[in-house]
Image 1: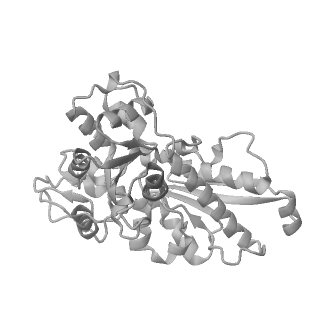
Image 2: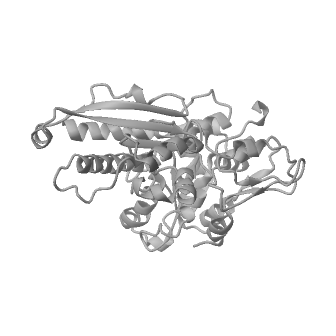
Image 3: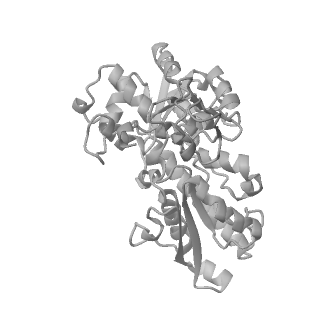
Length: 397
């Protein structure tokens, strides 16, 4: 494990510099009360025992006095040393990156992004969309196992408890660990898409590249500063080596491209390396709140009913509210009808935007009154598209 990762585990990702103005903008955004106020106009401090590393304070600071730990120099050194440097960009990166270079809001710069990564010297370019599909399948099947257990179906006695929470947001996972360890059994056992692909890159990927995992340097480009903490966790060593060696944010990638003198707007439409780079497209919606829920429900629907959804969009789980709920009726296939005596099953779900808004749900779980089956939680309001690693426009504050 690198010294940067050890420092992150000990002290967190986010720090307030000595030039802090003490304006309290960060305090208003912190979802956990991790920022200590030492008096009006004095430097604030972050308690790493309460911080979930989300960077919401960093984005809110109008003076740019809050920073996240950078791994950029380590990435540059790995490229310069001629290592096999494999990179995976998250779905939410490709649009925000375009905006960072002046493109119209909503422009998908996927092809130019792939070209830029190759210009920067990355050896292999994969895509977290691939492992987003794995997350969909893993969480969807796990949810079904928990529901089947609740229905008393044989063979599912060892499935987990309901409700099931999503587990792809590292800010939310850290929040649960720090403040509500009693609900950890409710979290999905699935790794996040970043960590799933990180494990594959140094096992299946390294084997197919004909490279020793020890010689692979794995980089993830994320809209999220908390991903730096997630990648540093010591349990993620599927190959015997750290699954993801470094995380750089969308903001840092834009800076690397500009520093290298690359004319982003003029880049050709590049392509991803296919082995671990292609996806169904369902992972694209992961970046917005409700996206993970919708994608997983599609899988659950297909497995339980034996049919694909006629309409791919599940509008009931979309929206912008801090806490939304919906009930999805899924018809049962012939085997499940025979086993349960029912024609369909109602799956009640909740979507939480902003981790602080999960508290009423946890209160219900602890009181034994929660009737949800599946709950998606995203730390950042609106989802990963508003992550702490995205480009910042301070003039809006």
